[in-house]
Length: 239
Image (cartoon, rainbow, N blue to C red):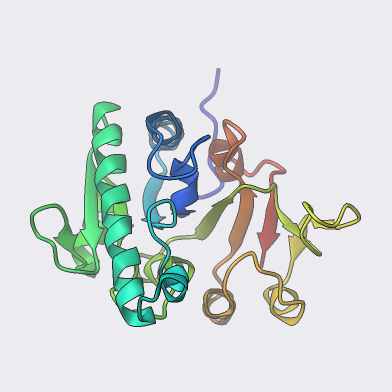
């Protein structure tokens, strides 16, 4: 049986912290993390180079800081540190799957992660190592969506795979609006004009200005990451 041919050779997978929740309301569910690790291993076996940007919302979300009386800047740094915790967990689980993984942090924490050095990260990807980006870009007020777009461009990724809990981009929230229309494809400008909340506007604008496509898909359906990379009809492509 011939080997399946991937549509993309180098991808950036954007994972929210919630992707690690599983059926929990807080923290890291090992089974959810293992499922992601298995799917990344499948991509690796196809020869696809994989970078991952991980969020921290399963532990702490910076924009929620005001609700508990924490200044936004301090809360954002707390959110960045939460991504480090997720990165350590994901790295360990992927290592157990036999993958060579490097965590790269925008905040210097040398005991657990390397600093971001572009040429070194590109070399790691060329060598077949999985790179996990944590701490966003190391600055408050920037989401991990925007960080994903920036890092994807810096390492010459061909696409951002935006993993979500829904199966694509809709005209409105499909949970509360039963008549919401799902888009198979949609232009960056239409995402911005309609204020669709699939990614923040800064991230979408950055991708638009540099012609970097985004594919939004449901991470909860097993095998979807591989299907997207093989060019199957999964999710919504923003172009």
